[in-house]
Image 1 (tube, rainbow, N blue to C red):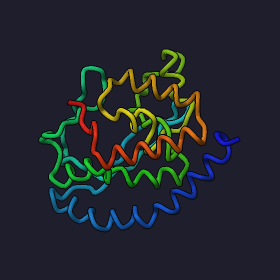
Image 2 (cartoon, rainbow, N blue to C red; image 1 turned 135 degrees about the vertical axis):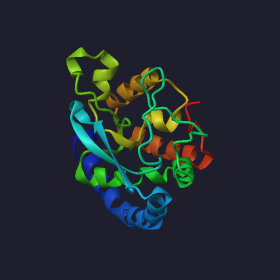
Image 3 (cartoon, rainbow, N blue to C red; image 1 turned 90 degrees about the vertical axis):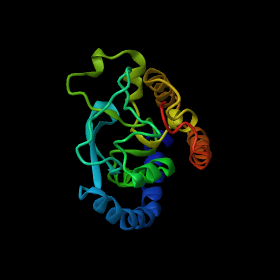
Length: 198
């Protein structure tokens, strides 16, 4: 009942409560982002959600315009404390997770949940049938603004380990688990732990 009904109700409530803060953050940071290099304020990323369906995920842009797309050897997105592609305000937003706040709009629209596996990159050449069990199971749940792997490990584990914990979460969704993830996320953000993969 929680997974199929109440979780969505909670998402809508959280999304509506967060909306004023999202708008305030956009009002404050949008001019700074724009005047840094006269580029778009938002970064619209192609991601995959539940059942491997693609959607557009919203973020505040933290990199300079036309920055190269760098990957780690395991295919995950490269990030570093001294990444020259990231703007000065982008470094601050990443450390405080403020660049993720527009994703509350995704939550309201229903493409994401407040808590779930972090959205994965979209690969049109992949299908669920070709994936291993962890990968398939990780797409049983809507992607989230925060999730088990994000809250407990953030960028300190490999891409495959993230898939493992995302799959475990998708198979064990409960209100008590979501509450634990929420509390752990607050601690991780405050302590700024494991922000970067290097």
